[in-house]
Image (cartoon, rainbow, N blue to C red; front, top):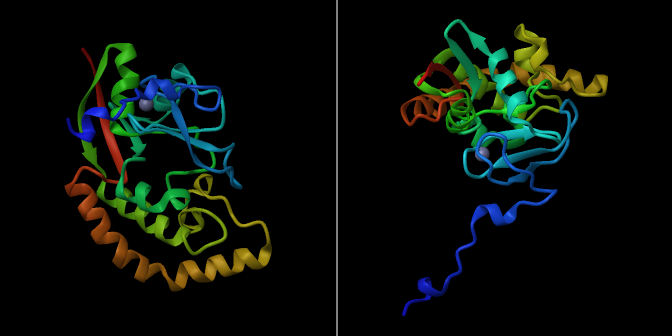
Length: 210
Ligand SMILES: [Zn+2]
């Protein structure tokens, strides 16, 4: 008899507790991922099964579905993919952690969530330009005090959480300019690989009724 046959198998559900509430998409327990940080509503938990991330407490499937609806663009919904290379490499610096984030989606978590409405993911499209920008910002976030400073300055201030002190904000602005091109040169191959291996940073998904 080998050792493998003696290894007890513990189902993920056994980990459920008040600290590990069920994932609103798939029901498996959520585990701690990131500590609270400025610009976020609380600590971040993640599901090891479907990949959904939850910021703060009291995750709820209906609320997650409503957040998905808010991301609608015509027939599609646009998500920052937590299961992207940018999300894996960036961790707390991942650009998808915008200040208003509550649910951090993956394709699998969207699939599980919309099954409650008898919907399926009919198509998934990688968004190259938005993805390269998100990966670029993720790299810059690793050297700045604030979060998403460059994308905020380029237009979408809702994404940004500037540093607290003026001198930090000045260093962030300088670092974003000086490192813009080197970060782009690194972001490009990461994101092209992301597109190729279905781990792109920004995706559009088309939902369809069963
Ligand atoms: Zn899940």
